[in-house]
Length: 601
Ligand code: FEO
Ligand code: CA
Ligand code: CA
Ligand code: CA
Figure 1 (tube, rainbow, N blue to C red):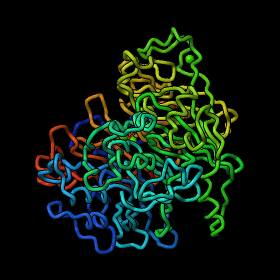
Figure 2: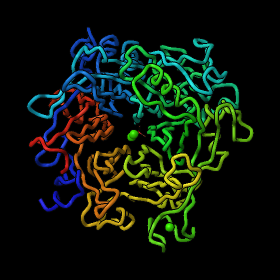
Figure 3: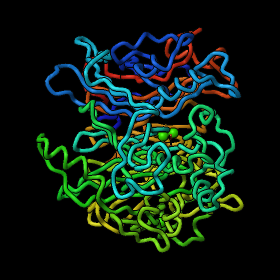
Figure 4: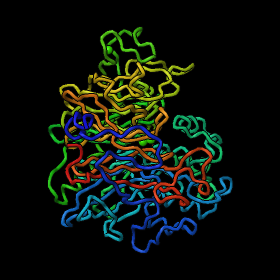
């Protein structure tokens, strides 16, 4: 009870102990339900989930696989209902199909996988007597977007020769979205979702004849012969020898309006192309959006996009159309971080420098704005499509896997999850620096960025590490200056979100401390700043994604339960959520307080 009471408002719960239970474990006094899982029907005509008789047509009307980003929208005019948006990052065929032969997937299996990618929109209903949420099947807003849904390409690289293919000579219509990782929501009511590790779907990059094309592909990790999933056998666009530009049509931020089920989702080229983890806007004082974005790979960069025009308020058609163009015009920047302690004091162990903090200053380096390139030797179109190459030339700082980025709605400070970097400091790789202070960084850090004059459009910023993660008994860890005897261990921060009280919540992926991943809350201001408290843990093999922290409930996406080396659909490593003898199923979990009071007060 003491531990529960001593948290900041919104974080007054008894922390969950680290564990390896095959369950979602929540604090005492909290309840949970599984809202929707892989295969649950959401569209008209979709059958109940039957893993042994699964079809692509069924999957296209059912909730997809490996839910990651989540958001819960209010639904005007329908009491007790909300709109849940989830994305579906990738498929794990070994866990989806009993007897799966990776060397010879069937067309049906491949088409099921296409249909299990993308996004889901599903209306959910609140229970009258508890905090439970259940899907409203066949609601008119329910929607599936898959690896074959047409997307409109917008912004300065739309129509570029670099985006044209045999099937789409216009370079303006792409079929599908892939590897949607985390995301964000806009003040104008849409969802942003990041296309991340899209290289894995494409074959034969090394056999592409043109050396420039091959080098560009390699910079994005397209290096394989056959792809893992063998999609190239069923659709030529996944064979880079036949369609080298198809690769350039993935790796974007996509925008979806969940309230307009007939509108094509968009790929926003002005936000650049890389392994987008997420995208979260804030508005400057004139209402102009600024979007923060991480490129999640070891030694990649942090970016921001500064829109030219302010958002229009109100619910008119004109306002909606205006706002749907906001992310097409503006300037794309990449970050350079400079430490303020002598380099000799950053020894790669995580020992604090003499000034007592990992901190310093930074600048945002412009890459392109509209059709103007700031990068020598690259056109603006090349900057947008090959943003990593532009950032290399600009001298950006190589970070420890920039994942989700979230500006605090209260303070304007921006929090960057840097999840880990096993190669930091190894021979041939960049050594530790003040922003990435540990070599062979297993546990990651959370960086706090303060824009100059608290202006999101600023070209300069200050920064400091807020958390250096790991076991608090490990001397290389740092918890915002808080007493390390009173915090939960945390490893591999991935997604970040704010609660209504201004606390930061962090979900983890890849806990390197021997326990399962989980969800943590931490105050960022006041006397509890740095007091990390664990709120839940996830089952065997799973990662914790998509946290949504509302006053009355917490939602998490439990991604890839049972994904353990050697496990398969016939010999699952997890019995979650359906129990022994059933396949593990990625699912959305909803947590509320049994006494009906707000979370953590
Ligand atoms: Fe899909 Fe960076 O996690
Ligand atoms: Ca992630
Ligand atoms: Ca310092
Ligand atoms: Ca992840």
